[in-house]
Length: 215
Image (tube, rainbow, N blue to C red; front, side, top):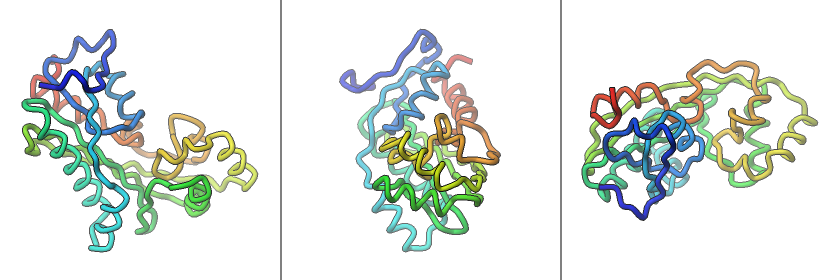
């Protein structure tokens, strides 16, 4: 069962949930997506050094898709071992532009460098999902969103970073599409939930197939 000491997310629509679900992610955007869809769930964040693992995988020649999948797998299985019979959701997102993989920026100055590198160019967001049960992966899925930033001015970049502040440190690419970050873009091709790092429709289908949600 899901431990009662964990953060639990429920609202008036969470009566749709039939069995324990755990989200192995601290992402506020992912929590909001699940809660908004009426899923009751607990949050148990996996202790994973994502930056170091990504660097190691890149050094080994892993693809962006493989990196996202492996990290989602690690988060889900690590947390699942603590929650017997719960369905544990692990998720990861990788940004790649012309074979360069971007991590979350470590400072506002680094966020500026990332945005300068992405300005006027196309990039991809690869979102991987893994569901684990009793420490074993039982389902996995990945989707890609294709993004194109506009050639914004330095003055706009200054104003954007001043308005967002350290919020940019929590997002790969240094933007939150659900906020002011939408103004950085010319074109977005892909499901909105994929852009936010949790492809929601296939996940809900799987949860229904496992009687975690009412069908």
